[in-house]
Image 1: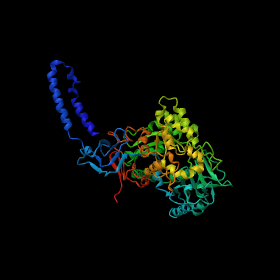
Image 2: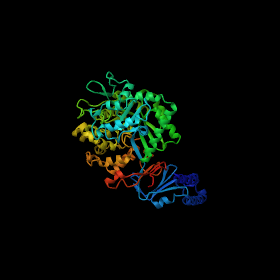
Image 3: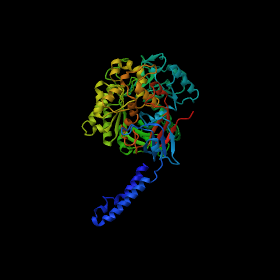
Image 4: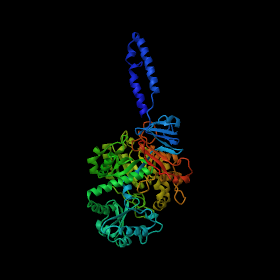
Length: 600
């Protein structure tokens, strides 16, 4: 804010000479001197008015800049200096900020908005997913087995093969044989007998293992289900290979043991490479701030080091995920607000249940397509209560993964128990991550408790084909992805993608939020859409508020961070059918262009 600084310098110089300064109390004997000095002050003010304006580092001009600031909702140009917004206005008003070293971006009518904020994703997971087999595009189980076998031919025997992204409900044909719609490991084990294989479900809440991986994890017919998890078995009790919720940790631990044998330098290089890949991906998708939904203290240390080294371009707001004991030992010394910087650590993440697709979401009533199950509580509610106590003690936000209606009810109960007696309890901005399926009684409780509904628009349309089979039509209509009901009840809604569960692309999630349209053209309870401006707010103003960062982000105002996303077409006015064709033209963080769409 150089303009403001310049004016403040003039004010400081003139202050003692004005009517409220020391000379103002000297009486009539000094009146002539006072008049002369007042005249001098007037000349000085005129000089200040004519003083040359400082130039901007970056100017955007000739566009439609939507600020989401009610006082000035739209301008055509913007100037940034020192990483912050110095001026907003017309092209003519901002032209005087242009100097020899100013970078000028001619928007040519394109839409610019406050920088998009990914409200819930897994930052390191995005990079890790790019370093393993991508299974999402494959049409069925047979194709997945073939892809893993091909990878095995290029991998030394005994080394692990890892893939991610499969979802049995999205295959073009069901596997055979199958149990609960999931394949059994026989075909995979026969095709890849010499490599342990772990294939992570798209949701991250289940995994599939071949015989070699099951053996490495010590899983056999006698292995009990771990707390909060399930080893899916056939009629004889044999493990099928499907590991639900915490059961996948058994195989993940075996994989970790193998990775630990690698040289420390390689492990660190791989971890950093994953973060660099994630940074590159999110910036290319228009994200300027990323809410990381659960990293260990070790990862936080790595992020902090890379931020200090200038290796990451996106801003990060991190939820720490660890044991109660580790939180008690570390929360006080790790807490940091971004304060305009690149890294904030001020939230705790815990998962109370699993995912709907893997039937791990914790429900009040049994699954319609699996009447013997109501899902899983993946964390003991008593542990969540202890984390709530720690969050309050150390002034952290508590962010609870809750997908099923029972998980959401228990989460809100814990919020109410912990915050209800506090005069500022609603101001703590604790968050429910996902809030996908709610009982009608819980919808008004979000606003009443000040709980943020951190949802993901893309989950609605991605999950829609199996929501009604899982829940039945009544429960689906009542509380599945009820954006409109929550908004009308006064809840603050934050958007995102849960990447790498879904692509981090905000345009797809925006489209889902404003249309709820499936690929086949049908619409999933379309009465629950948000308007386009509301949807934009969930990706900007609301997300900044949900992280206690509204003073710096979320709207475009003088003095705030110069974080912007520029699109190649106007998302707010184009026909619905063009939204998904929209691309990010520029991603600007702190007044620096961090991504520019390649020219054709």
